[in-house]
Amino acid sequence: MTSLTHQSFAITNPWALVPSLGNLDAYITAANRLPMLTPEQEQEFARQLRNNNDLEAAGKLVLSHLRLVVSISRQYLGYGLPHADLIQEGNIGLMKAVKRFDPDQGVRLVSYAMHWIKAEIHEYILKNWRMVKVATTKAQRKLFFNLRSMKQGFKSDALDDTHRNTLNAHEVNTVATKLKVKPEEVLEMEMRMSGGDVLLDPTPNEDSDDAFGPIAYLTDTNHEPTAMMAAHQRDVLASDGIAAALNVLDERSRRIVEERWLKVQDNGSGGMTLHDLAHEYGVSAERIRQIEVAAMKKMKAALAEFA
Image 1 (spheres, rainbow, N blue to C red):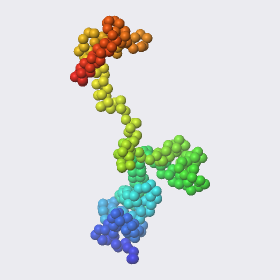
Image 2 (cartoon, rainbow, N blue to C red):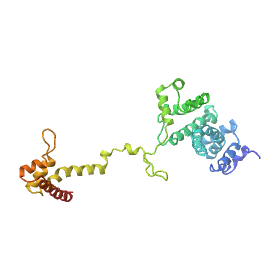
Image 3 (cartoon, rainbow, N blue to C red):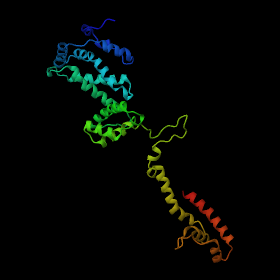
Image 4 (cartoon, rainbow, N blue to C red):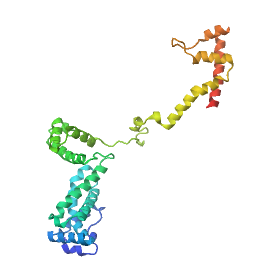
């Protein structure tokens, strides 16, 4: 298979040399076959872009460094994100580098672009590795990527599986010393990295009709609108409702209900017994019970109407 030469860039659409990322293998093959630029060519194209905003020159600079993005993106495959997405984000970083590259600084574009490519891939990983960000500051981001690579080294040195999930005290101190951070920061970042995403309100599936999630115990039911309305309604029924229901009773029935259910003795015990009321009214205890039952039915109907 004949390799591409520098003259290949002279075609009308140089991007036609690279297939879509949808065919990842073909893309990588094409990117690796694109010619590298000499220092003189790189300087020439960079000046054309800076002085004349020559987009064709910019395209040539980008195309000649696509293999660099492919190489760097491979270093981040362990995060479980699609290789094509990593390459795409790296390409964005490469284009930013080309736009800002100063040919008069005396450095090659490859050295300058590495920073921008890695920065863009880092940002993508931090946004998509977890639903919740694991690192929000510059120091946390540095710790995130360095800790993960150092943990891989500890795992390869471990004699058994006990060290494969968490760091021991010696390893934590080693990481903290090397990265110049506190051991507590290492432990906190390791906890963030090891924790998975949990749906607050999981949707029941075929295997579970009553899926349970943290939303069940994180919800403040005391301030949930329907619960507050129900509580308010109970309060109204317990005060105004009971008063309205008592008003529908005759004097004797009302006193029987009040003495039996609404009054408390000084010693904390309940109200009067059936026998106490029977003795007071000169009737049998059974008669007092019948009056009480009839009064309760009237009150129930009155409460329903009130509600």
